[in-house]
Image (cartoon, rainbow, N blue to C red; front, side, top):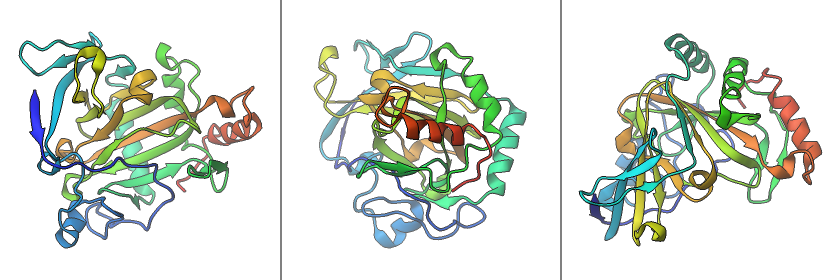
Length: 298
């Protein structure tokens, strides 16, 4: 599918530090949007200028090629009649990774903790070290480990061949709600501290993860921007690695959040913080803390 859009917004950077807690119902209360970031709570007084890149109404004369990811074939299937598809490596999915009962318990425990405001209508809970990505500094800070309920999930992840040896050092819970206009702009996760695999468990509702390549895909004969829609079923796990992790940006469009959606994203350490790396000692300290599974949100 070729669509000509109007304007676009820059990508999101790694967010630093928790904001003040949101309203108890998850919808009311002031937002934490900064700069061009917008949500439905602030648009009424900030206006639509700089609205998220997800909204076609605000993209500037831009052709986008649209594809749909097929997890069985591991192909990006074109929505254009007669257009070729192409291999899309670096995405691993496991449907029904958690049960209904586990999902209910996870959400109940999360909702007993404080949800902190984040940008673009999201709320978050952080379990991880204190990081300054611009200065490339990291310390344990108030990090006390991943939450207790994650221990069995991490052990289950490690049983998957694609996730063998996966040892997360950080967990970020994000809460999306359509009444807040929640979304996350296309972005690449940091690769100085975070390692090869990004693992997310999707809860409460289905959504779509949009992978995007602004400069096109010359090897597939696509000179303009390319989007690949990855459907994420409720209670599924998705892992990004390789090109899907380092080359393709990923984001969640506001229009793809139809009900409340909560996700937990787990990140492992990069080679610099593993045995043999320049900061292996610090990495071992961070991992020992993370894998104690005694943590509370920061």
